Amino acid sequence: QVQLVESGGGLVQAGGSLRLSCAASGSIFSINTMGWYRQAPGKQRELVAAMTSGRVPNYADSVKGRFTISRDNAKNMVFLQMNSLKPEDTAVYFCNYEPAFLSGRGAWGQGTQVVVSS
Image (cartoon, rainbow, N blue to C red; front, side, top):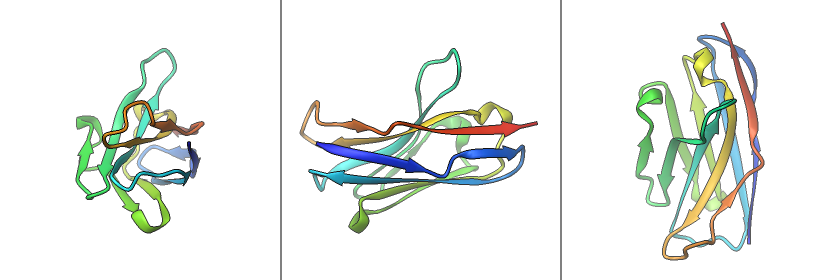
């Protein structure tokens, strides 16, 4: 099993920045995708950004140009640098791990709250 622990959420004013971190531990398959999803109150969980172990990124249109995902494969960590934050970015942000070729072996973190005030 894989465990994910997020950190870095908080309260920030619109236009500000936050950096989220996620550390993975356990039985990590080297070929994987790690990323960030978010869920706002009353809404479905949605992809924010993800990156393969080969460092190929994928971003939601709503965050392109503002958010940057990165990862440290040696430390099994993934990061999300969030700039120019907007009130609509307010949500609980979840770290996700999905190994390639191993269906059903993914994992979720417990989430970290991000609140952007106007």
